Length: 140
Ligand SMILES: [Zn+2]
Image (cartoon, rainbow, N blue to C red; front, top):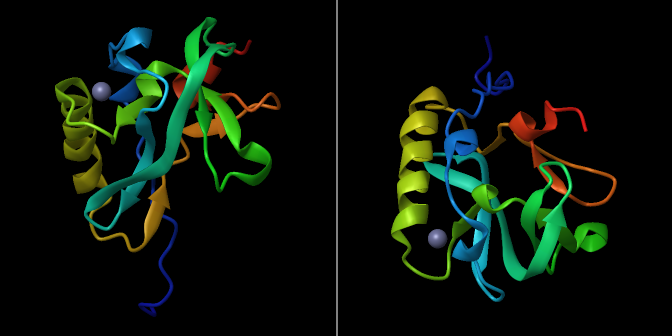
């Protein structure tokens, strides 16, 4: 087996994010956030955004946030549920606890993978709504 060919990692399902309890008011316009999607080496990896304004998250029928990604192209603005988001802009105990739980769950399962690994937990609807696989199962 040549070393250069690495099979796509068997990405674990996300059991951490669906259990996260965080309210909408935890975030405010201007906050820098990340949606964690996988790993990069021994770190968590994801997409970073700036929180813009409250926005209805139709996949969950709950309050969400409009997010801004200056490099997003056609997806410059997306809408996400608060439990997908992690603060980058300030040290935040709530977000750190979630981040730590995700790290402890994910890093051992993806140990030894090279480069960015997207676990495929999130998808984007035609209305640019970010939806977690656990929230998409309802089939709205
Ligand atoms: Zn936070």
